[in-house]
Length: 88
Image 1: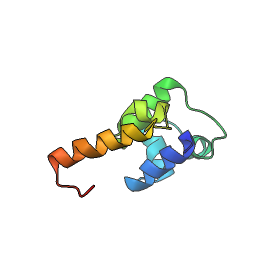
Image 2: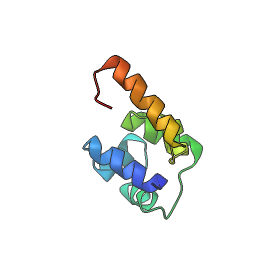
Image 3: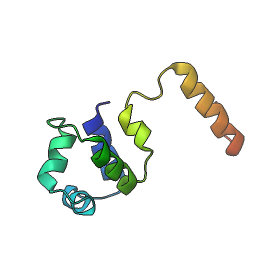
Image 4: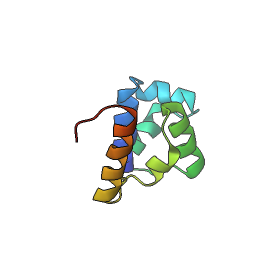
C-alpha cells in the first residue's frame, strides 16, 4: 500500500476530514489531498506531524510495506494471542 493510501486510510479511520488534518498540522487541504493521491511526498517533519495527529507510529508510514515478511505477521499474531485470545 502506498504512503498516500495509508495516510488516507488512517485519516478516515480517525474520521478526520482532509481540511481538519491540514489545520492540525498547519497545511491546507490541497496539500493533504496531494499526499493522499501520491502526487507529493511529505518531508520527514511533516510526516511526523501527520503520524502524531493520526496517532500512529511514524515508522509505519515511512515503511508502508510492513509487515515485511510472513513470519513477521505470524509473530505479531502470536503476541496478540498472548494478550487476547485469538484463534489462529
